[in-house]
Length: 386
Image (tube, rainbow, N blue to C red; front, side):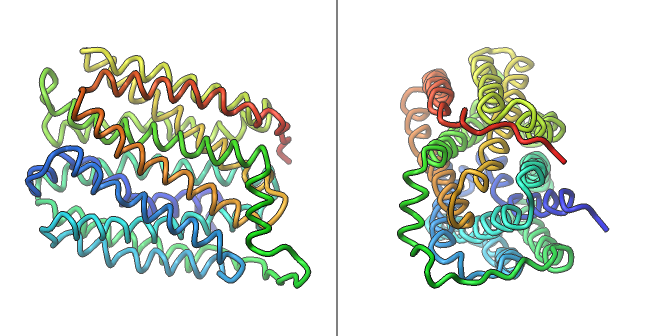
């Protein structure tokens, strides 16, 4: 029997592969839909709008949702819009299908976070969440490689249809391998949904966590959406398959992200977050170079830093919440995905109007601000693994 951490890592991979694969073929999609980079970038990342909405919905109705059933049903239905993306030729319809994808991906993601928070101890949850983020890393790498190469070899449609098959594989994995969630009894004397929200939104650690999630995905999606246009233009001039090879920059994060949980256990959440985002800041500086080697190294540093930061922040949500952990997870992911949506919209406008260097400087300022905003996390003490 596979360990829980391996199962949730595979589940993450099969849940989020749709999110990232399309970003690798942005130049091809831009040409296919005869539009500009900012419009296509916003359409591809419209999935984050669906993700934010679904996170909010789960936060509202989590008490009534069976965790395991919700996960596998979300992934099964995810195959439908993924399949349809392979046949549409209208940008508006493409955008709404991406929103639908995002809603189903986020429902599975949020319920998985809730499942881990409710079924694991604090130390186990940190390790399991690191495993989940590691699967996220792999979905970035493999999804982009698959999309870039299959789109070049067989056309755009085949890429989407292959992802639909993987969605169904994720549904089957969740159905067969996730244990039965602990039955939850409603407390008639417990706080209402709005009271729970008030508790979470006035909790300093959760306030900081929601804001940091917003900034993490803002930075990550902004970089890895628009760097494709930089790399495909002169002086680099990379082709589709060559762009796919660049995504091996995510490989180091596969090995380093699990260490985030160990760093939290020994040095605490605040220290681990500062180290993670400090590395991302160094990577951003490397994006200003005209050297392909240094730029790729910078992308690798950003990948490691942001994935570790996501594992650090999301892994302590359950411990920081003093009521209804599922609602806290939903609110966190709503903020996280809103950051991705606004990031691609704002940075797309800056990129189109001013070019790459102003984008990098702006993202560097946001990264440094996130390190200041993380101050409330210093209250989270190290958790010794048992």
